[in-house]
Structure formats: C-alpha cells, structure tokens
Length: 99
Picture 1 (cartoon, one colour):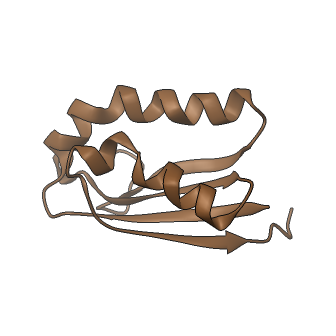
Picture 2 (cartoon, one colour; picture 1 turned 45 degrees about the vertical axis):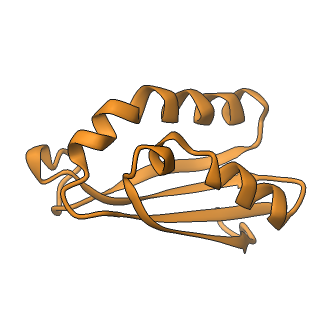
Picture 3 (cartoon, helix red, strand yellow; picture 1 turned 30 degrees about the vertical axis):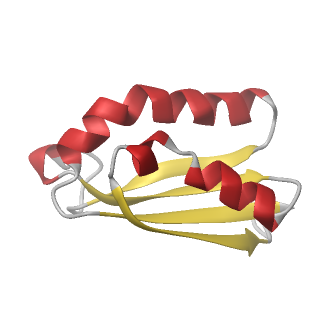
C-alpha cells in the first residue's frame, strides 16, 4: 500500500536542509530503484519552483511500504529528521486514483 509522508519544516530550515540533502536524496533514490516511490518533493516557501533563500516549508513523499508502521519507521529515520529540519512529520495511508 502507498503512504503519504507529509513533513513540515522548522522556520529557516534551509541551512539544515543543505547539509542533509544528499543523504535524504540517497534514501529516495533507493525507493525509486526498488519501484516503490510514487512521488517526492519539497514545498517551496514562495510561489516559485526556485525559492532561493526563502527555502522550503516542508516535503511530501508518497511511497509503497508493507504497512503504516514500516512507513513510520522509514520516515523517522530520514536524514532531515536527524538534522532537525522537520518540526512535524505525519504518515497516512494514500490511495492513488488519478492519473
């Protein structure tokens, strides 16, 4: 089943994001390689795909896991969590409908 991992950043998280980004992306690439990643990306702090120094306000990952518990364990181990980027992380079951 798919699960949505919705993370909200602490204020002014850009520097912490930069430091942990490569490790964060490495985990996402592993999900992609395994065919389990539906989508992933950040929420820009401004209405643009390149927010510059404004940074990001959070992230969304939608991926397939064995269970909600497995998705939560994966989310809790994210390098952004360990780096203090995320203030709150919510994991929910997700049902893809379209496209």
